[in-house]
Image 1 (tube, one colour):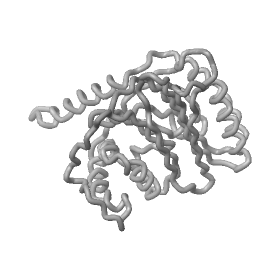
Image 2: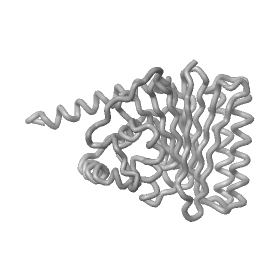
Image 3: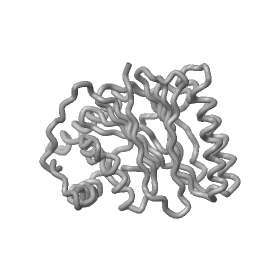
Image 4: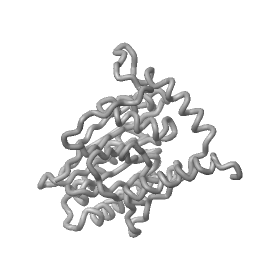
Amino acid sequence: MPELTTSIAKTKPRGDAQLFSHVFRGEKGEQLAITLLRIDGREREVEQLVQEWYATLERSLLRAEEEPYERLEGTLKELNGLLKGTLISGNVQEVNGIVALWDGTSSLHIAQAGRAEAYLTRKGSTVQVTESAGTSREHAQFLHISSGSIQEGDVVILCTERLLRVMTSAQMTQLIRRRGEALEGIRDILEAEKEAGVIAILAHPVRDQTEAPLPSALPRHRNKGASFLDRMKAKRSSAAALRRSVKVPSWNFLKSFRGAQHSFGETIATLQRRVRKFFEDLQHPTR
């Protein structure tokens, strides 16, 4: 049976931001759910919201009898009611959250609210597999579920913040290839940008994997006296210049609760086709 390894890291809290994470396991141990939260607000009200959030996930997501997708759908409706009531009260200013459910066999279901996002790294490419509704308080709702099959070697990054604001998808791929340094690298970059957030990495290990050679742009030997962020400065500078000069189209991978579920594999194939066409257009003299 396929298995997912999970690892979580948090930045330093900033201002009124409070950071939370929790991993839930099904009674038989095969199912796994994870939630990440960044909540800005008064401590007492934030703690109450987190307690109700966790209780809802425990009761509705892991103990209900429906299929995983239906259970997640029902749970998200309950969480939306909780979010609406909490934000109307005014004691909590902002909520950015993400919920992921692994069915224990091959499928992963992900939903996000606020600025939270999820990314899939597969076969050397990284793409965003969630879509934000907006940044204002009224958009702190779960609107879509992203679902797909997880393959050997896949890595899913969950974060309460929009990583594409501070790094490129190519940088994420490089970080994932360095394995043990991925969480450290993402956290360093967020903290350098004065962002507070929680990051989780879900990985489906490859059996009998041997380490592939890394690109020469990222040296194998670490300077133990320098942070990961220091070692990435040159690459971030060039990547930032590319991001300013090229407008990346937005991808609509998500479906509403009752819509058809999209495939992670289709996401990768679509990206690769569009990237090839983009560079062909650049090279064509009449386009």
